[in-house]
Amino acid sequence: MRKTAERPGLVDEATGSHERYGVIDIGSNSIRLVVFEGLMRAPLPMFNERILCGLGRNLHDTGKLDTEGIEQALLNIERFGVLLLAMGVTRFDAIATAAVRDAEDGAKFVAEVERRCGFRVRVLSGAEEAEMAALGVLSGAPEADGVVGDLGGGSLELVHLVDGVIAEQATLPLGPLNLFAASGGQRKCARRIIDEALGELPWLTKMRKRTFYAVGGNWRALAHAHMSHSGYPLNIIHHYRLRRGDLEKIADLISRQSRESLTGIRGVSSRRLDLLPLAALVMEHLLTIVAPRDVVFSANGLREGLAYACLGKRVRKEDPLLSAVGDIHARTARFPDHVPELLEWTESLFPSESASEQRLRHAVCLLSDVGWRVHPDYRAAQASADVLHARALHVSHEERVFLALSVYGRYTSRETHGELRTVERLLDEDTAGRARIIGSTVRLGETLCGGVPGVLGRFSLKTSPRKGSLKLKCRRRDRNMLGEVVVRRFGALAALMGLEPEVSFVDD
Image 1 (cartoon, one colour):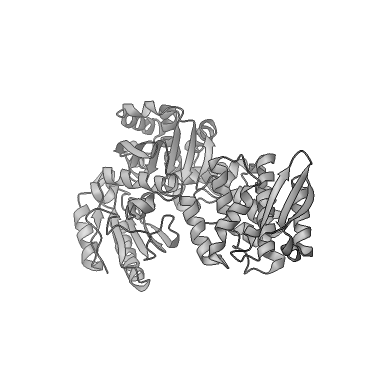
Image 2 (spheres, rainbow, N blue to C red):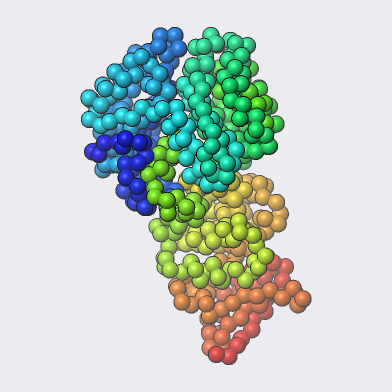
């Protein structure tokens, strides 16, 4: 088993390797093992297990790691090492953060882990922890601009991002475990500690009207609470966006609640409830000082940052969405060389699309074969659900729904139902209509050529607003390709666009 690198995440630079990569993350409240299926631009976690050990539970009072937490952590880290070996993972990073970094017996704990497990543990500095958290956010949002806040059990890392570039950063002892111990659980005292710590960072006040990127399980719990409270239809935290005022209200409410009052919040573990009010209090004060326009919750953080740091510059520059759906395409496509033709085929109907709209259309083309192995009666519903719920899909919730709705239309012209119909309300009417048209256009194209490269280019689509028609043009010798199913699906596309279908033939 290969040891971890001198600098975390830089075992060797990868160029898009499918070699499995793992991270053992020894935090103040929890330890976790994540194994990614490969070091790609949008790596997919194939294993993810968290154990709440509470290593930093009594650190503020004793200066040492929690005794029970040490025993539990050692046992589970040994287990993680066995799992890495069994999974054939030779490339990994084992890292420790705030509690181990600050504890008097942190070095002794690390030495015992290394003795038992046979691999090196890297204790991250506050600056390294902040940098890796920021890289995790950038891995999913390359042009992120604003402030990243990563709240762990022991510390809060804050990083200023300027159009995807790391600027100022800081580490503060404001993790809920530390804050509870320092304040004695008293809200008034906790507020004073938070204000004093944040007051030492004058650059935070320059972030107004930008975006705050929230990282960490305690803050993801706030997002779950808001979803539950508001009846939000899509239970996916990654890239969940809230206006500042909406989050301020829920953070203020939760910061005042008892553990019993918080029981039952969807998606929040019972063991996290004790820390949630203090996590909410930290968020409330940050929002007051930073005054962002909105808050985006990121499921990507330190561990994803470590994986991203392994990548070479060329791979880092890849579009995370197109890379992720490209990986799906590689696993699902019947004829992998068909996408460029499909992209060109659909382009004529969208002459004025923006770059972001073109990107989504490209993604739909890459997803065009995602459901072909499913039974025909369930294909549309299953394929759209797979896209809607896909992991490592770095898009806004609206874009996620757009892709799912387009894929649904690629397989059927029937009305949506169930969850997809519910989440459709996240899109305005024009955007939902565009998604359906793209899906129907792809469906027609795939029917015409059977998904085989080299055929679709013999046909073209063109709208004629003056005549109110949608024209399908083909060579006269290819008229035998216009079978009953093709004609029916062409008519369905025209009706969707509010146009009359028209077929024209040209001589060779």
